[in-house]
Image 1: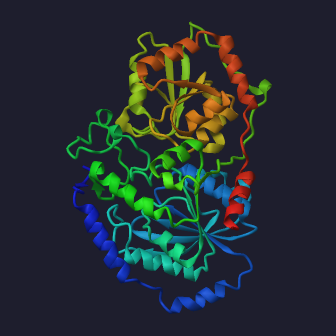
Image 2 (image 1 turned 90 degrees about the vertical axis):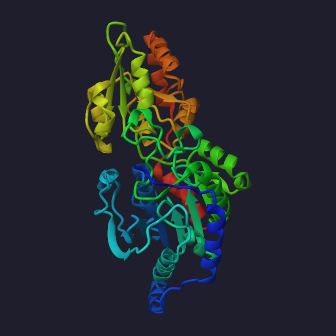
Image 3 (image 1 turned 120 degrees about the vertical axis):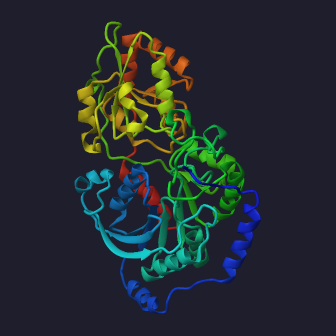
Length: 457
């Protein structure tokens, strides 16, 4: 059961805590100073990437793409927090082919473990400043003589890191990979999906809108807490030198919440080293009334990723026109097998082959929350498969801009009718698919060059 704490008096309590905390500053041990001097002798500057242990795999893959392309200019370190320890790693440059499997959490080939700190205090959403964390951050920045900080995600990290970097004049970049800095659920903005009711049954997964974000963190009453969270981040977002959104839709959401940062936030789309098909490469199965419409739904399905929508969509299929396929590691609690065929997990390097064996007419990406970027969308297009999506987030934005699929209604009844209608004309469907060949995908080196220009400022 998710824990909740009433937050009616939280704001004054936290403000008082911060005042006391600022008066009792903690500095690194004197023994660290010599190490700082040693690191200054290294001929390349040092960059620190920051992430949480519960990272989104796409975030880590984008980070690795940047690391690979800037390693000739920087010594690279990764700081990772799992809420019980803070760990630092050194990045060991490898060829692209050697790290393609890192999407499956394999750090060993590209990172060398260096140091670990055991935390006495758990991370809490209520107090985003903590003397213990602050001490560790100061030691890291001093011991490794960090010149640039790129924060990929702040979950499980405290705001101390950005404040220290700001005070020390260290060039700091914050990436907006999700909506964590608007609401700590990381992905949910509107009231429909917030955990407002502490009595909401957690075991009724398909009838619950509760989003399980960080199961080991004490949950606040979000309805009261979110405005306070926004107040804190409205101040904390002043600390980074640069704030990066990977898509225009994320920029729009953040600048609507924090309008004073319109000029500070900039868009740098993710780059991806992937080949796109030619017109002749795009060969899709015909759609006819005698065969079902095959829709492949890849990824790990959850409440956020549209499991309720998928159930409701299939309920409309009285004539059994839709044949759903699922590819990914999905929890048994959602009983996905009752909806269609399960093909199990996959590694990104064999994505195309698995898709080809299923031979779908469409790939369905039905996330109910605005995603910042989608590698699955790009991979779908690289296989020449049109994508069905809701008009949300970067996926909806990309389809509108590139005509590589169809935007359908977020109301299952209307969505079902749309899918049937657009499947009635095979020639029109095939012509739309051919447009995928015209889509341009930015490569990873171009993305890295854009970040390099920011790192060097």
